[in-house]
Figure 1 (cartoon, rainbow, N blue to C red):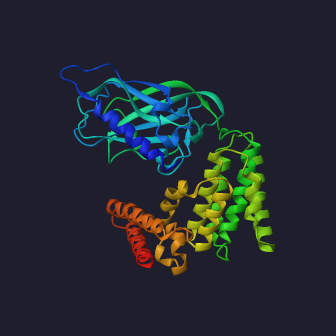
Figure 2: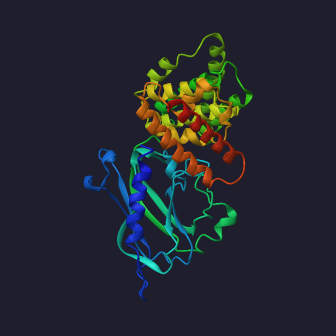
Figure 3: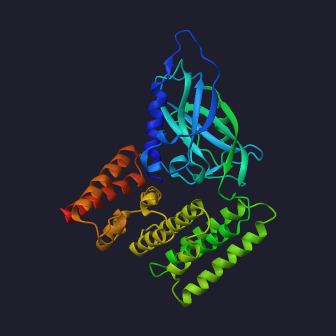
Length: 396
């Protein structure tokens, strides 16, 4: 579903921009919001069976910028003030899982307003995780910024140096509404989630050892992940969860030295339990461990692909997560026989499908190269383009 969401967003944004009109001496009402479930006819085909809610806006945002402007939506649990998390990369903070949807409105919004309700964003219940499960009152917060100066939030918290500018470029809009959070809360001790977290550690250890050795950075990455889980657990359960996960890490390393971890057995035990969000977190951990030693070993990539299939996560859905790690690595360290794994080419595909995939990859990485500043990530993007050229030559 991850790759479908940007298509939906493009549709929503175009709709919103074109329904904004010039003030013509009329200021419009204050900015207001509403949340309504989308009817079937308003969903794109790939999301017909997914429950979705539209975020609608009306009124005057009082935008003062005569340059490219972005609107930033954040989502919080109203009672606790804690951020709502998203399993979608496209609606997550840069360095975390806090819900964040940033939409570019263009450079012609100053002095304009929405006279009627306009759908400008969407919420998908299965992608949202709050501190607690169930019917909760949520707080939607909307701010406007220059498109290149949107703050980098941390768990929903705006950097102190940006706080004084929150209402400098437009209205700060807020809206409270009741919403059913269907995933177990990240502050709740959920037995199924705990089982998936233990399995995540087993599988991460397997990834770390896939290249035949354990790098200290890979072990540190798993410890960092465990700390993140413990830190987001309620105070009454912190010690319990910490002991369980740390013991799992010790046992997994100990057992892995004696015999290989059975990826199939571990995945079979969790395939039908827990939420999709928990399984995305599992895959993210495996990707972070893969990238921790600065190289993307072909055996590690193959194992991650195998894990995603066994737990019911489409590997194409996590391609963006994988690319975000790969761009930080030097792809030239891959052996020639690891070319397909690095580029996500399935050897069972026919030549026409492989060529189509390579063309798509070229467009994606060429776009990234042009948007990156000088530095390591830009150099790695160029090396990835070199690999794509190599694959193009191989399959031409």
